[in-house]
Length: 81
Image (cartoon, rainbow, N blue to C red; front, side):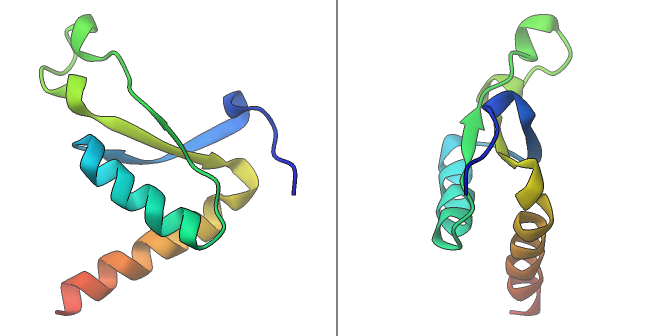
């Protein structure tokens, strides 16, 4: 499946650290969902002091429902423990 350019991808998760983003990436990629990680420059704009560490997790628009379902399943599983 060919996906449109990264500009057409959708942000689905904001990770507090790169380590958290890599865990999310691993989960999604294990389920055949391509992932792009980006850092937003919010801290330099003065909007959020801690934003320099945040990492945005993006997936192709057509795979957003699958990606969100995967993340919700994991989140729900962790809450049940």
